[in-house]
Length: 286
Image 1 (tube, rainbow, N blue to C red):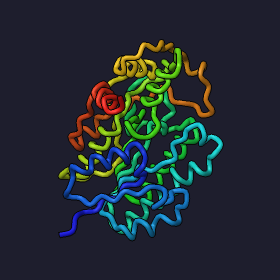
Image 2: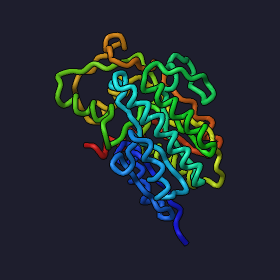
Image 3: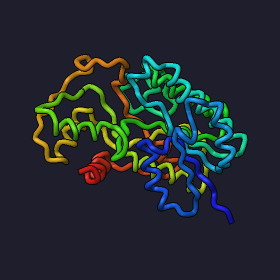
């Protein structure tokens, strides 16, 4: 009997890489990983043929344009990859009867909340990247109702470029560093997110919809940097600064904490504390 196929886009990214690692524990599936060479997300017209040829039962859409600041000047490209390409993936999944899990972001919100963000809270992106990801969510659900959108935040991993790897490098290179303390959220170890996704795929009941997932806890980027410093045994001084003191082309949300009640209740998923994931990741990096 043929194994169910799971197609995963964004194979070389943080989450795609962690899914490649995690997939070895799921021999009942045939995993097909594609990156921009096999599926050019900047050319949505080419996407249907790739998916139809693979003909998966599931598609996990991890591929994205993630250069938040550059998106401000590359708006069309961001919207093509994060919006139009997702729409094409969703429409093709519907055509072949595949279930879609699409990964989105807290950046679809304005970031001015004072309580953990629920799936039903009003969106309102404050930068191009967030707007392009919101467009992708909308097209995914419109083109394929059999879609689960998973919003996450502050993703890091031993793979790709991320805050944890940047901090480790800077703490080695610089005499001191400054880190923003007035943006709060909870980090997400991509390996934990990968496990949550595969938990959904293997769950006894499939419930499409929008869900939030991150690790547990509430910290600022500054507190995150201090925890990284402690785990790597660095003595590099870290100074807290405000967002205003570190201007960037794209505005950043001040509040990124996600309410994970729905994904826990629906799928029985537990999110580890952020400290656990960070210790595991750093253990692999140093």
